[in-house]
Length: 62
Length: 300
Image 1 (cartoon, rainbow over the protein chains, first blue to last red):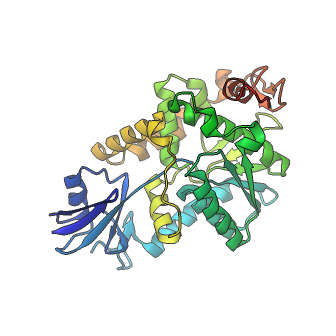
Image 2 (cartoon, chains in turn blue, cyan):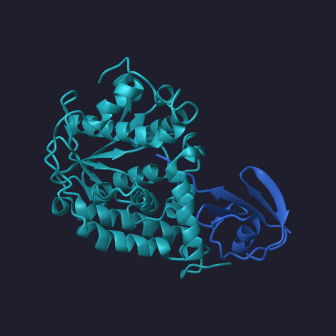
Image 3 (spheres, each protein chain N blue to C red):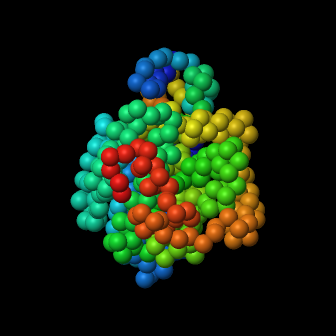
């Protein structure tokens, strides 16, 4: 299980990669940056049990 | 671990943090060197958001022309005050000259007041027109020869799609990376050095470089047409990886050159607005017209 924080909500989920986690949560990788254990990573990054992932929304608007 | 060619962990596009920084900054500098003359005076339009902060930082470090920062306080409670506060600290720390112009001082009322009794969907249209007006006028008065806008690839494609959906060919023809070279002497040329940079890349850059950047969104954003188009484009990209890049190539290399305003006769000679004296294609410019309906008690 990995711990994931998205939009202020914390959940636990099963996923082998960040992309799989995003798919599981219904999150579009174009709209979020993944921060794994405090480091920015790509969607292809593999995950291990106990990892902590924060999905940061790509905010915008002048 | 997904690695960069150097062996370190990748953060974006197969590059580690250091190589990603080099790539992004190098891409922006390449655009600056293509369009900026050493004699230019650059006004960098900044909001305190991720894109414009990155642009300001890179332009300042580049140092290829005289520059200063310009920003607009539209009067959006709980949002602009936070981004401007960050921006002031950012500029002060780096010794960058910053000028802030406000809707309230210039037009007599804030954006929040203008939209109090009007549909919020109009916020981006109103705000965009007034901001461009103010940035053009005040940057010109400060001696700027070019205004740099931090519109990234996704912003540009969203605008293109919005104009396409509303059937506005004239508006499409007026967009692109460099705007307004021959329009009018009062119209300051606009350059978008992030034109080819994906929105997510500037988000990654900001996360890596500006930990104090306020994590706030404009309260009007989610009700805007742009917000819906943004989701649409991102969904298309998810289903067709590379779609945005292909769209930008087509737009930049084929569509824009084919729609040169002069070729289509869209740009009648710009004249000066009968009321405010700023460049306009009509007797009364769009901003004066907007202000008549939004701030009836105040005339520009």
